[in-house]
Length: 240
Ligand code: NDP
Image: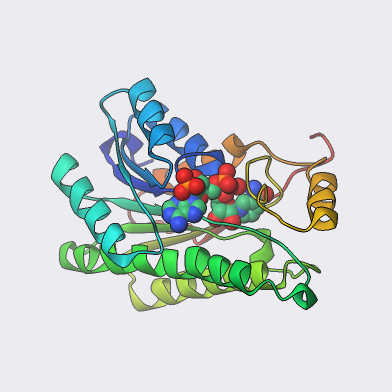
Protein backbone atom coordinates (compact mmCIF):
# COMPACT_ATOMS: atom_id res chain seq x y z
CA UNK A 1 0.00 0.00 0.00
CA UNK A 2 1.14 3.53 -0.71
CA UNK A 3 1.12 5.54 2.47
CA UNK A 4 -1.56 8.23 2.26
CA UNK A 5 0.44 10.51 4.56
CA UNK A 6 2.93 11.10 1.78
CA UNK A 7 0.24 12.74 -0.30
CA UNK A 8 -0.86 16.30 -0.94
CA UNK A 9 -4.55 16.14 -1.79
CA UNK A 10 -6.83 18.90 -3.10
CA UNK A 11 -10.57 18.46 -2.48
CA UNK A 12 -13.41 20.56 -3.91
CA UNK A 13 -16.83 20.77 -2.29
CA UNK A 14 -15.20 20.23 1.09
CA UNK A 15 -17.68 22.36 3.04
CA UNK A 16 -20.24 19.57 3.54
CA UNK A 17 -21.27 15.97 2.88
CA UNK A 18 -18.91 13.64 1.02
CA UNK A 19 -16.20 16.29 0.61
CA UNK A 20 -16.09 17.07 4.33
CA UNK A 21 -16.11 13.35 5.22
CA UNK A 22 -13.22 12.77 2.81
CA UNK A 23 -11.21 15.56 4.39
CA UNK A 24 -11.73 13.93 7.80
CA UNK A 25 -10.87 10.43 6.49
CA UNK A 26 -7.68 11.53 4.73
CA UNK A 27 -6.60 13.86 7.53
CA UNK A 28 -6.92 10.85 9.84
CA UNK A 29 -4.61 8.95 7.48
CA UNK A 30 -2.05 11.77 7.67
CA UNK A 31 -2.49 13.39 4.24
CA UNK A 32 -1.91 17.09 3.73
CA UNK A 33 -5.12 18.61 2.44
CA UNK A 34 -5.95 21.79 0.57
CA UNK A 35 -9.71 22.22 0.61
CA UNK A 36 -12.10 24.48 -1.33
CA UNK A 37 -15.74 25.49 -1.66
CA UNK A 38 -17.71 28.74 -1.63
CA UNK A 39 -18.76 28.68 2.05
CA UNK A 40 -15.49 29.91 3.53
CA UNK A 41 -16.68 29.87 7.15
CA UNK A 42 -17.25 26.11 7.02
CA UNK A 43 -13.84 25.48 5.47
CA UNK A 44 -12.18 27.67 8.05
CA UNK A 45 -13.88 25.83 10.92
CA UNK A 46 -12.93 22.42 9.49
CA UNK A 47 -9.30 23.44 8.96
CA UNK A 48 -9.13 24.90 12.46
CA UNK A 49 -10.52 21.67 13.91
CA UNK A 50 -8.14 19.37 11.99
CA UNK A 51 -4.92 21.34 12.43
CA UNK A 52 -2.06 22.52 10.27
CA UNK A 53 -2.16 19.62 7.80
CA UNK A 54 -5.38 21.15 6.42
CA UNK A 55 -5.40 24.51 4.60
CA UNK A 56 -8.31 26.12 2.81
CA UNK A 57 -9.17 28.69 0.16
CA UNK A 58 -12.51 29.90 -1.15
CA UNK A 59 -13.21 28.30 -4.52
CA UNK A 60 -15.90 28.55 -7.17
CA UNK A 61 -15.27 25.57 -9.45
CA UNK A 62 -17.23 27.18 -12.29
CA UNK A 63 -14.62 29.95 -12.51
CA UNK A 64 -11.42 28.79 -14.25
CA UNK A 65 -9.36 31.62 -12.73
CA UNK A 66 -10.59 30.76 -9.24
CA UNK A 67 -9.57 27.12 -9.79
CA UNK A 68 -6.10 28.09 -11.10
CA UNK A 69 -5.58 30.33 -8.06
CA UNK A 70 -6.72 27.49 -5.79
CA UNK A 71 -4.18 25.08 -7.28
CA UNK A 72 -1.40 27.72 -7.22
CA UNK A 73 -2.12 28.40 -3.55
CA UNK A 74 -2.03 24.68 -2.72
CA UNK A 75 1.31 24.31 -4.46
CA UNK A 76 2.71 27.29 -2.60
CA UNK A 77 1.46 26.00 0.72
CA UNK A 78 2.59 22.38 0.43
CA UNK A 79 5.20 22.46 -2.36
CA UNK A 80 3.38 20.20 -4.83
CA UNK A 81 0.17 18.36 -5.67
CA UNK A 82 -0.39 14.62 -5.81
CA UNK A 83 -4.16 14.26 -6.06
CA UNK A 84 -7.15 16.37 -7.10
CA UNK A 85 -10.56 15.18 -5.89
CA UNK A 86 -13.24 16.87 -8.02
CA UNK A 87 -16.14 16.36 -5.63
CA UNK A 88 -18.20 19.59 -5.83
CA UNK A 89 -21.64 19.04 -7.34
CA UNK A 90 -25.24 20.23 -7.34
CA UNK A 91 -28.51 18.37 -7.96
CA UNK A 92 -31.60 20.59 -8.34
CA UNK A 93 -33.82 17.84 -9.84
CA UNK A 94 -36.98 18.60 -11.82
CA UNK A 95 -39.01 17.16 -14.71
CA UNK A 96 -37.78 18.36 -18.09
CA UNK A 97 -41.22 19.84 -18.86
CA UNK A 98 -40.77 22.30 -15.98
CA UNK A 99 -38.13 24.01 -18.20
CA UNK A 100 -35.95 25.07 -15.29
CA UNK A 101 -33.25 26.38 -17.60
CA UNK A 102 -31.29 28.17 -14.87
CA UNK A 103 -31.07 24.94 -12.84
CA UNK A 104 -29.99 22.97 -15.92
CA UNK A 105 -27.27 25.52 -16.55
CA UNK A 106 -26.12 25.45 -12.92
CA UNK A 107 -25.77 21.65 -12.99
CA UNK A 108 -23.82 21.76 -16.26
CA UNK A 109 -21.61 24.61 -14.95
CA UNK A 110 -20.75 23.01 -11.60
CA UNK A 111 -20.84 19.30 -12.41
CA UNK A 112 -19.16 19.39 -15.85
CA UNK A 113 -17.29 22.68 -16.25
CA UNK A 114 -16.21 22.48 -12.60
CA UNK A 115 -14.55 19.12 -13.26
CA UNK A 116 -12.98 20.35 -16.51
CA UNK A 117 -11.65 23.48 -14.79
CA UNK A 118 -10.03 21.23 -12.20
CA UNK A 119 -8.48 18.97 -14.81
CA UNK A 120 -7.22 22.01 -16.74
CA UNK A 121 -5.60 23.42 -13.60
CA UNK A 122 -3.69 20.26 -12.65
CA UNK A 123 -3.09 18.39 -15.91
CA UNK A 124 -0.13 20.45 -17.22
CA UNK A 125 1.55 20.04 -13.82
CA UNK A 126 0.88 16.28 -13.71
CA UNK A 127 2.13 15.86 -17.30
CA UNK A 128 5.29 17.83 -16.47
CA UNK A 129 6.14 15.63 -13.49
CA UNK A 130 4.97 12.39 -15.10
CA UNK A 131 2.46 11.39 -12.43
CA UNK A 132 -0.62 12.51 -10.52
CA UNK A 133 -4.10 11.30 -9.65
CA UNK A 134 -7.49 12.78 -10.56
CA UNK A 135 -10.48 11.45 -8.63
CA UNK A 136 -13.84 12.55 -10.02
CA UNK A 137 -17.00 12.02 -7.99
CA UNK A 138 -19.71 10.92 -10.45
CA UNK A 139 -22.76 8.96 -9.29
CA UNK A 140 -24.80 5.81 -9.87
CA UNK A 141 -26.53 8.41 -12.06
CA UNK A 142 -23.57 8.00 -14.43
CA UNK A 143 -24.97 4.54 -15.21
CA UNK A 144 -28.75 4.98 -15.12
CA UNK A 145 -31.32 7.69 -15.74
CA UNK A 146 -34.38 8.38 -13.60
CA UNK A 147 -37.34 10.70 -14.23
CA UNK A 148 -36.59 14.24 -12.94
CA UNK A 149 -32.86 13.44 -13.10
CA UNK A 150 -32.27 13.66 -16.87
CA UNK A 151 -29.96 16.68 -16.74
CA UNK A 152 -28.25 15.64 -13.48
CA UNK A 153 -27.58 12.15 -14.88
CA UNK A 154 -26.44 13.75 -18.15
CA UNK A 155 -23.80 15.70 -16.23
CA UNK A 156 -22.67 12.56 -14.41
CA UNK A 157 -22.49 10.50 -17.64
CA UNK A 158 -20.25 13.33 -18.85
CA UNK A 159 -18.04 13.11 -15.75
CA UNK A 160 -17.73 9.36 -16.35
CA UNK A 161 -16.75 9.90 -20.01
CA UNK A 162 -14.28 12.70 -19.25
CA UNK A 163 -12.55 10.59 -16.59
CA UNK A 164 -12.35 7.58 -18.91
CA UNK A 165 -10.92 9.83 -21.65
CA UNK A 166 -8.29 11.15 -19.25
CA UNK A 167 -7.33 7.57 -18.40
CA UNK A 168 -6.96 6.61 -22.05
CA UNK A 169 -4.85 9.64 -22.94
CA UNK A 170 -2.47 9.51 -19.91
CA UNK A 171 -1.30 6.18 -18.62
CA UNK A 172 1.14 7.86 -16.22
CA UNK A 173 -1.70 9.73 -14.48
CA UNK A 174 -4.18 7.78 -12.41
CA UNK A 175 -7.90 8.51 -12.94
CA UNK A 176 -10.63 7.29 -10.66
CA UNK A 177 -14.39 7.59 -10.90
CA UNK A 178 -16.19 7.34 -7.57
CA UNK A 179 -19.88 6.62 -8.08
CA UNK A 180 -21.92 6.94 -4.91
CA UNK A 181 -25.45 5.65 -4.50
CA UNK A 182 -27.87 7.60 -2.33
CA UNK A 183 -25.92 9.25 0.47
CA UNK A 184 -27.32 11.40 3.28
CA UNK A 185 -25.88 14.88 2.63
CA UNK A 186 -27.15 18.37 1.77
CA UNK A 187 -27.32 17.46 -1.93
CA UNK A 188 -30.75 18.30 -3.35
CA UNK A 189 -31.71 20.57 -0.46
CA UNK A 190 -32.19 23.26 -3.12
CA UNK A 191 -34.75 21.28 -5.16
CA UNK A 192 -37.46 23.80 -5.98
CA UNK A 193 -40.27 21.37 -6.92
CA UNK A 194 -42.04 20.16 -3.71
CA UNK A 195 -43.04 16.79 -5.22
CA UNK A 196 -39.48 16.04 -6.31
CA UNK A 197 -38.16 17.15 -2.91
CA UNK A 198 -40.60 14.70 -1.25
CA UNK A 199 -39.47 11.89 -3.58
CA UNK A 200 -35.82 12.54 -2.65
CA UNK A 201 -36.75 12.29 1.01
CA UNK A 202 -38.23 8.84 0.25
CA UNK A 203 -35.06 7.71 -1.61
CA UNK A 204 -33.00 8.86 1.35
CA UNK A 205 -34.74 6.40 3.66
CA UNK A 206 -32.13 3.88 2.53
CA UNK A 207 -28.92 5.84 2.27
CA UNK A 208 -25.21 5.66 2.98
CA UNK A 209 -23.45 8.00 5.33
CA UNK A 210 -20.75 10.11 3.63
CA UNK A 211 -17.90 8.31 5.40
CA UNK A 212 -18.65 5.24 3.23
CA UNK A 213 -17.72 7.25 0.13
CA UNK A 214 -14.71 8.78 1.89
CA UNK A 215 -13.37 5.26 2.53
CA UNK A 216 -13.75 4.40 -1.17
CA UNK A 217 -11.70 7.49 -2.07
CA UNK A 218 -9.07 6.56 0.49
CA UNK A 219 -8.88 3.04 -0.99
CA UNK A 220 -8.14 4.45 -4.47
CA UNK A 221 -5.45 6.77 -3.06
CA UNK A 222 -3.79 4.03 -1.02
CA UNK A 223 -2.91 1.83 -3.98
CA UNK A 224 0.68 1.76 -5.22
CA UNK A 225 1.54 3.99 -8.21
CA UNK A 226 1.29 1.03 -10.58
CA UNK A 227 -2.34 0.39 -9.65
CA UNK A 228 -5.11 2.58 -11.05
CA UNK A 229 -8.55 2.03 -9.49
CA UNK A 230 -10.72 3.20 -12.37
CA UNK A 231 -14.14 3.14 -10.75
CA UNK A 232 -15.74 2.34 -7.43
CA UNK A 233 -19.54 2.14 -7.19
CA UNK A 234 -20.90 2.21 -3.64
CA UNK A 235 -24.58 1.56 -2.89
CA UNK A 236 -26.50 1.22 0.40
CA UNK A 237 -28.05 -2.06 1.47
CA UNK A 238 -31.25 -2.63 3.43
CA UNK A 239 -29.11 -2.64 6.58
CA UNK A 240 -29.10 1.19 6.41
P1 NDP B 1 -23.37 18.41 -0.58
O1 NDP B 1 -24.45 19.32 -1.08
O2 NDP B 1 -23.32 18.11 0.87
O3 NDP B 1 -21.95 18.93 -1.04
C1 NDP B 1 -21.75 19.55 -2.29
C2 NDP B 1 -20.50 20.38 -2.20
O4 NDP B 1 -20.28 21.01 -3.47
C3 NDP B 1 -20.58 21.48 -1.16
O5 NDP B 1 -19.41 21.46 -0.38
C4 NDP B 1 -20.66 22.75 -1.98
O6 NDP B 1 -19.96 23.80 -1.30
C5 NDP B 1 -19.89 22.35 -3.22
N1 NDP B 1 -20.17 23.23 -4.35
C6 NDP B 1 -21.35 23.43 -4.99
N2 NDP B 1 -21.21 24.36 -5.95
C7 NDP B 1 -19.91 24.74 -5.92
C8 NDP B 1 -19.14 25.68 -6.66
N3 NDP B 1 -19.68 26.41 -7.65
N4 NDP B 1 -17.82 25.81 -6.36
C9 NDP B 1 -17.27 25.09 -5.36
N5 NDP B 1 -17.94 24.19 -4.64
C10 NDP B 1 -19.25 24.03 -4.90
O7 NDP B 1 -23.55 17.06 -1.43
P2 NDP B 1 -22.68 15.71 -1.53
O8 NDP B 1 -21.62 15.69 -0.53
O9 NDP B 1 -23.65 14.62 -1.60
O10 NDP B 1 -22.07 15.87 -3.01
C11 NDP B 1 -20.71 15.62 -3.32
C12 NDP B 1 -20.66 14.95 -4.69
O11 NDP B 1 -21.24 13.66 -4.61
C13 NDP B 1 -21.41 15.69 -5.79
O12 NDP B 1 -20.65 15.69 -6.97
C14 NDP B 1 -22.66 14.83 -5.98
O13 NDP B 1 -23.21 14.96 -7.27
C15 NDP B 1 -22.09 13.45 -5.71
N6 NDP B 1 -23.08 12.43 -5.38
C16 NDP B 1 -23.83 12.52 -4.24
C17 NDP B 1 -24.80 11.57 -3.97
C18 NDP B 1 -25.70 11.66 -2.79
O14 NDP B 1 -26.67 10.89 -2.71
N7 NDP B 1 -25.45 12.56 -1.84
C19 NDP B 1 -24.99 10.40 -4.85
C20 NDP B 1 -24.15 10.41 -6.01
C21 NDP B 1 -23.23 11.38 -6.25
P3 NDP B 1 -20.38 25.35 -1.28
O15 NDP B 1 -21.87 25.42 -1.38
O16 NDP B 1 -19.83 25.81 0.04
O17 NDP B 1 -19.67 25.94 -2.45
